[in-house]
Image (cartoon, rainbow over all chains, first blue to last red; front, side):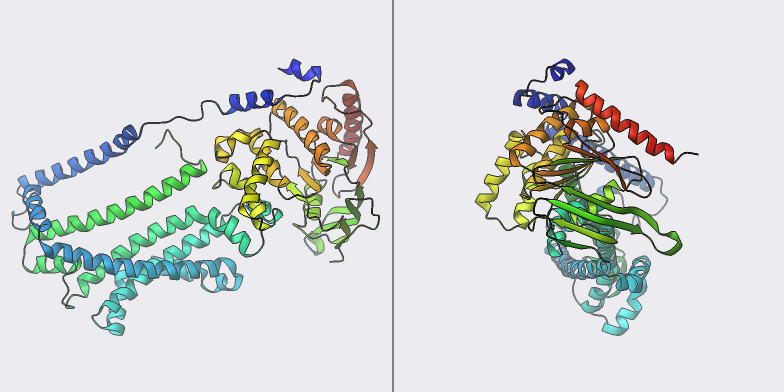
Length: 294
Length: 259
């Protein structure tokens, strides 16, 4: 090939496209969707089977009497019974509505505060470290104050959910903006992006992975705060999932208690999986997903 | 801040620098990066800046591109052209397809969608990447990415191209092809190019004029016209002899910093 260069003949399009084809050959390895799904699913199923197995063994060992720790079969039957009961679905609806309202508000607050702190040196010096401090504060520690401020009401729960979730989201935004590669900023500015244009075309998309990570962590915090809130702030005559946990404990109905816990766990997992899928889609588009590893 | 960016005094230059100085830091820690650099790039001229490490080559391009401010002197650009800048890395936006990357400067200029699509297709044909518009940068080779970056810079429709070691990270064969491509596009579009490199052969292959910068501080110490007719080959004896001369000068300059 080097010999061709020496002839000095003008290069042809075919030569260029030939080199292109050689250089990108073998980069596309398609795995069938079925195989990928199975590869992602079987370890989870195996882990689930193992957990249920351990649970059953503990029950068989007679460590605790069956009315305080029922086995997986009893709880499974209870879960099936619950699934056809309006009370469970009502509880899920109430809890998810609270979660959605609190989370959406947290996202709005977190994005605005995060963007403001990322942009302004003064704000960063003033409240940058406070955001992290807020993040480390266990949400349950806010409840006594929240109950004094808002009494045993939805507002108290909402207050704590937002305080739990917003700092994580704000921190995600700050980290995302901070880690935008300077080279991309220079390229963007050279291409004519200034001010808002720079945010729209460079900073926001470059910060997206960190923002999604912050949103995911914010969700985890808001879900935990919400559960703590629903356990503590009962009395408001609504049978949310957290209230059902409390009632089940008061009635010593452990199958109900455990089946409600499973429902809470599953909701958390489903939402987490949605964030995981979003994160993976972003990484795949940007070519930072290790195909062998996933 | 005595630097200004205005139209060049002589109407014959695309880029005119006079007495450009750049100081980083203040007081005792101040470092003089560029010291009184004056140079003109004529319309359609290909100028290569060559120098060892620390000669402020990249600093100079940043100043001309308006990404940084000179500490003194004047930088003038013909018309209201804002120059296009290319880096050693392609600096493509990884979240966008090849097409969408090339489209960014067109969107920022507010061109209507139909016109943008037409321009993108034309630019991708120019760099021989017409079939790769839907790919993402990570799916392309280094040379292809750098061609996308070139197309994106050309989308600025600017007559002045600033290039900061754009082929430094590529293998020899790919670099060879890109030299041909750049030369073709430069002559078709009558661009003025200010090209920074530490590769003297590359400079002799591409330039109408080679300018040698000293190191710490960056000063112009020597320049030469490259009278070799085009098309040139990087391994031709004429190019090699120019390169040898530049290398000699460069060695003398580097030796000055030894003990």
